[in-house]
Length: 183
Image 1 (tube, rainbow, N blue to C red):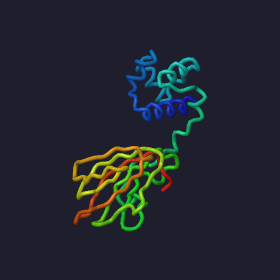
Image 2: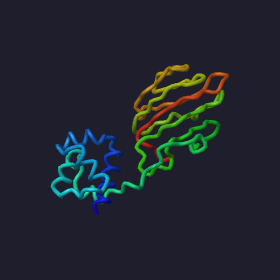
Image 3: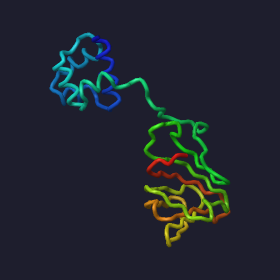
Image 4: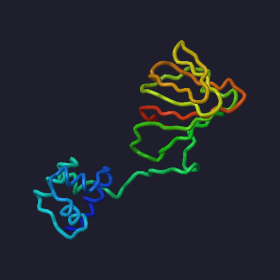
């Protein structure tokens, strides 16, 4: 039991990005005691464990039922980015395999003359992006502007919008949209 509690506590603390010293300070337990618990050399009392978990914060029940082994993929190689674009437009979606994705983070590529379609797009949420290479013409409602490398945008996506590359070079940009639409 003590090995399981210690390993779970270490995994939880690491997952939350809290150092051993910081957690010991927060909960009023000595650093050496916390270290011994995490190593499985000492089994904490229920009250000590509750005191430690209150500093995270997490309930004792959640501590024992939380799945610390099942983690979502964190890093992605270029070939692991799913292309969810259509036509000539390429949308490389980061984290397409995450079931509970809260946002859509993409690297978008628009060849010369490519666009999101003649019809304006509108949906609930927000979108932001930064142009990395080339130019992109963005129409949001009645406003149109051509953005160059380093320039950015941020808007509410319920306003009809459209993207088009008017240049002679491909345009690459990085964007983020919420909520994560089903790509």
